[in-house]
Length: 332
Image (cartoon, rainbow, N blue to C red; front, side):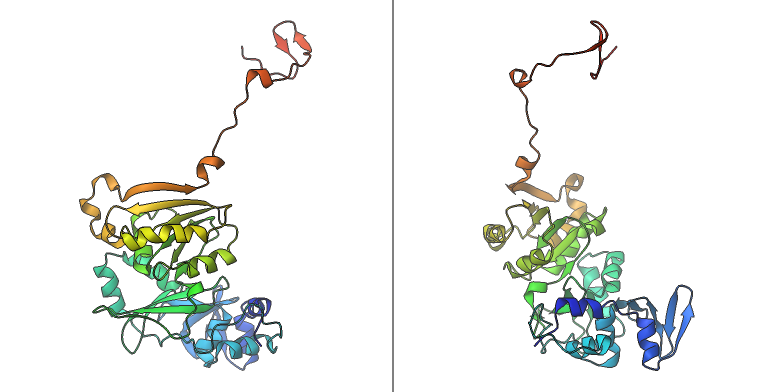
């Protein structure tokens, strides 16, 4: 048995101030927010929370897992007081999946991202969204993948020193590291660092677009994202400029619905982080070596042509014969 998506959505809509009071916790109003007496660096507002000391936040299910030590099913049960549905729709994250404990500070992660030329203000945005953090035990940087309701379902650990990298046990690669918005365009990358590098190269209105890391060149993450966001209009395939990245393009194209425009963007270096590191040496901000139309846009933008012989003759009434007709545009 598992909780349905409808149950999970209701759990994530619970008012946290009311939830804490119902469990005997003390909260105090602070402007438009509330503070929890037990954790004075934490503020809540409606169904959202943010822990300022660790620059992370989220929704009620994460809140209960984080501060009440519950598993995902236990958190949903505590929030809505219901048992799992029997139909198995929208299964909860694997019982084996738990995010690594967070380090209070993120000095090692920040230093690593600084070496990769990722702007600090961009890093802070991802920290606030709970998409990246530093783990307490090994000081790896953790890239978190969430589903469309904000529930963590995937995590990838990257060593801040050396070449260590590993998916956390129980991770669902269909919900890989991504930045989600209400926009209708999706940019697809092989790795989280390339995703963040691309945003650093093209920062204008970046929050109006969607970005997805595949965690390699497989299509599972892309298929998972598009199954949740069927309203996408344009998908940009931004895999590396090497054999693996180029060979993956046609496989990824097969996973994208026919209704969507698909464009391949090839970086002018091996990958987008290399482009970012070489940014100041590149002429006129030309970071893309080639832009290849794979499907759709040319047809969508075609302008219909009407031949004169196809125009039907109609009788005209005159305001001032033969100069100004009724119902027609007259240029004087």
